[in-house]
Amino acid sequence: MQLPLTHGKTELIEVVRITDPVRHLSSDDLAGDTAAFWAGDQAQQVLSLIADLPGSERYRCFLPGWGVRAHDSTDQLFEIAFCFRCHGARIWGPDLPVEQQGQTFDAESPAAIELLRRFRSCLPD
Image (cartoon, rainbow, N blue to C red; front, side):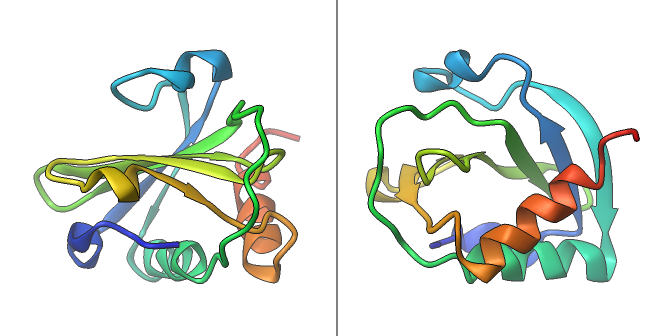
């Protein structure tokens, strides 16, 4: 997956559990409940997983269940919502080219499986 150019400034990843997936079809930002914060090496590992997501064929639903907000020391850099059913991702960020805002990923790839496992590990037992 192609990350925004600002991804190199990321110091903190906020994991978001999306509570109203339908809203993300036309929204201006990512909405949901913060499930965790990942910093340092953990944040960099997650960015590497996202960057390693291979492209895929897109399906139709786009009902994302998880998202991330990337932050540097003072600002939010970008947001990504992931739908592991339709293999779609939506990215929001300043000066993000239109062709980068909607992307696909192979939800069955090793990187996607590990990313989803990490997301799910944020849920209470």
